[in-house]
Amino acid sequence: MAFPSDMIIRPICNFIGISSFLLNSFTLYLIVKHRKIYTNNIFNVFLIFQVLYLVQNFHFTILFVPFIYSTLGGGYCIGLLCEPHYLPFHLHYAVWIFLVILLCGFFILLIFNRQQNLLPESSGLKLRKTTS
Image (cartoon, rainbow, N blue to C red; front, side, top):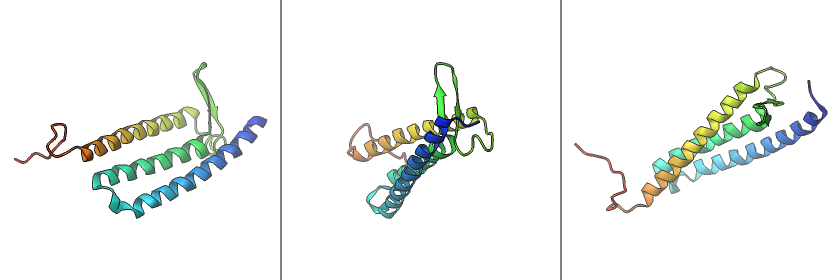
């Protein structure tokens, strides 16, 4: 059952989702096009990070569109996969939390890789490959 406020919110979220999806796709194209300016480990993490952000953004703004009531411990969603296909709110919420955790992990990994690239070779903090 759709409420009148849902009919206002859904197009707004879909517009935001589509415009940010296009912007993220362009950013992904630029990452791949300018691959030579990144080191290999930074490029791989950056590429996976951007793809995950693209998926998370599409899921959150197009497929999910949540209304979360934290005081009640629940909510509902009005996205494309919620009402017509009756996928439960908690399934979408679990996917969204999983994607956010992955994004945080890859962001930390990106910072760590960048820090390792900036350290001089003589630094004790630099991780090196061991030779046996």
